[in-house]
Image (tube, rainbow, N blue to C red; front, side):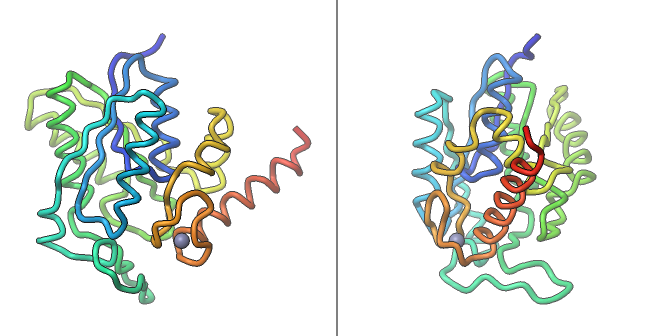
Length: 219
Ligand code: ZN
């Protein structure tokens, strides 16, 4: 039996679009929220709008430009994306998921959604502390205590890698859709992307691995 209402934290990228398809399968009603924090590429927001319209998912866009005011990063400024050994990449925005998930919680309360879905993942290369399972669980408790609610934060991608995320998209009959319609690239190129930035490399590597295992699996 499908559970009732869910809110998906949605960026228009591969991971959150996979989560959106997953949510549509698991929940009776699904809405999405996108945070506008002065991303380098407005294409991201357009992409998120297009996908939610196309899938007929009510879409909320919240202005979070204060995040850029507090902590500009390589995601919002036009600068090279770098990662020194043993350090977080220059795309790290301190507190981003803390704030996003907290605002998602407030919105979820407003729209009567008990379930909150986010595409964060510990298996990812970057090691952002606020993408870790322990952080999400701790915030889940804090949100519930702060509003006297029983929210459940779901992280369907937490323990899987990019190849397995493609596999999940395929199982949801959404592989081609996600391949063509989502934007993960740091240079703002939709679909297969620029092919050169770290996000494109990771996405392509995962896709190659999955396609190879699919052929090899003989299914
Ligand atoms: Zn790229």
